[in-house]
Length: 238
View (cartoon, rainbow, N blue to C red):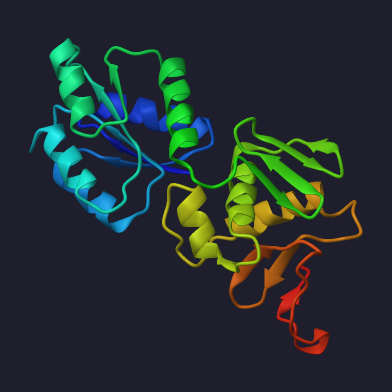
């Protein structure tokens, strides 16, 4: 899942970025309102964490612009403005939650997870064949056996399972799971796919992760086999 952090104080922005990345989220950071609006217009975020005291405009103006779209992500206001009137105004103008500074990161993380549960229309439990992912508990099982995954491995698997049957390019995977642009040279996706296969495919007869030649990868269960003849299939194991 991808989160936009709108915070002009670099120390706080870096702290939030490191903490949320450690929790398995992909993070973009915006130091001002204009950058935040540009990011929000060009990227589909799962959540926005918004400071109100920005150098170029009031954070409530940013909130107004975000809420002006037909569909927008949940917004958590994170601000030093702690008066009741400020909190009420932020919530009335469309924020989903309001947390005052200083804050405990464990509380912020709990609120982030709660908002993501509330704002996520997709099911909390994902299933492909005998592979099951409990998104909220971050638990993966196959054929009843628990599988331990690193945060990035879990992020890739969740993204693929939410898009089961759909080929995903390496660029799409990197942009969703990592905090970087895909430069066409790195093999980081291929490395992590090998890790995933070693944990969820190698010990089982039915292989779920498929390589889509010339595109990237997809995950597909035995309930939906490829419709094209085997001799012409674009899928291959690597």
